[in-house]
Length: 413
Image (tube, rainbow, N blue to C red):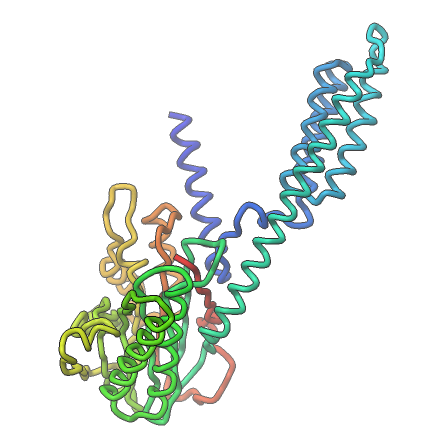
């Protein structure tokens, strides 16, 4: 019974730690780079414990041998210099412990064993440090790629409150196929969120083609069906180029494009085979049209069917939530999907007057991590938008008290 309580407490602490890091916009760091300058505290604490045990039990060969664990522990979390320092300290303490035993002579083989253990610890620390530097280099390159592909979105943009998050299932390389963008255009605020088929760099390249076409057409074209056609054309050209380079796999992407009227009295939606956006506000929770069209990149294969543009009434107090399948298809240990709509209905019951985008994302992410026990198996992108109150100037860059800066990350699946 006590073991079950302990397991539950540890799991709860783990989920709380994950929620805390994700609220800051950070993914969990891999083990190689998780420990910073304070990592020396761990081997130092172990050293103090061993010394105290030796003081209470008296010097012995066993206590001296336990001291050799200190540099090995330092090798796993600290730099080679720190590991060498702990190793030298341990050799000194080890010889002191041996000299303190009147009945034991100082044996050369014991000293050589200690020296070998320290040298092995330094070698392990050097290897780990080089691997850590390599991981940091990969993350830096991935972060640069992410910033080029997906620009940061201001928390106030286009007369709207905006919050966006990207939860990476793989923290080692943070670039992949989920994408989103928000444009402030002469025709109203327009947003896109989607997910590219496939993984790795090909998915990144395809996401770049879709987002690039949306940025250009979404700003200049007044009609949303023309914007959608331009995106389809951009994907077709991208696939043709990849084929000429030897990659004959046809790429496609599911996506939702949503355009807010300049007075925010209605929205237009084009859905490319994606999960329909949810709207949450004083009137409850509803879902906008979903999966009406084919994914981007598949129109030519089916004879270029007409693009369906849905116009839906919209209230300024409502918040639109767009997510990728990393949210809707997240499973728990019982293999059950994440019940997004039920969670949104619960959020609406707790906040009947409306929910700010930043608060909505925080509550959804908390529920998602609780459902999956903190283990995401697929990348998840979330984007929430709500019109600013009429009395607030749209050009003001100071976020309201309930709005947090939108964090963005992009990760390899």
